[in-house]
Length: 200
Image (cartoon, rainbow, N blue to C red; front, side, top):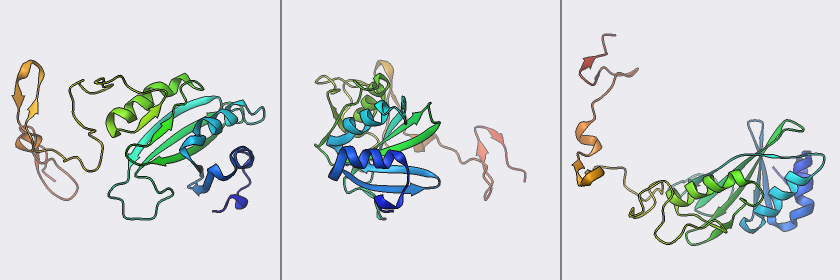
């Protein structure tokens, strides 16, 4: 959808404020996604928050995604996307802002606009390796993972398992696949734990 095709006041506001930094507007299942350059994220969020008519005063969340292996059409070119979910308690509406970066590129933090953004940004940094400028971890510091963890487990180039797991006090446990048992589903019979749950 072109920017001119939508009538949402949020799009008109950000078109005026961001100019060429507003890249695309997408309507999907009743939601509006506004795609912007990473450098414009704080400006866009502040504009939506401070606008007297719109009043996007509630930061719901921001989430990350890795599109390394995605083979279909994309809204943005970067490998990683960060999606901001904002809600207006004034007009009872929701808007999504999307931006994308590649490995080594940063997104400016918005924790100074919405304090509630601090922890979601740190989670994205810890799990995907996307750094939020102004909310960077200290050297050797992890947020959700142990400080000596190497890598970013939600990246698509990380294996899905099969290795033994390190537990507390230096013990090692079996790989997930060593202890998995099939469970009953709609298309096959199986067991969960030691109890038979099939019998269909």
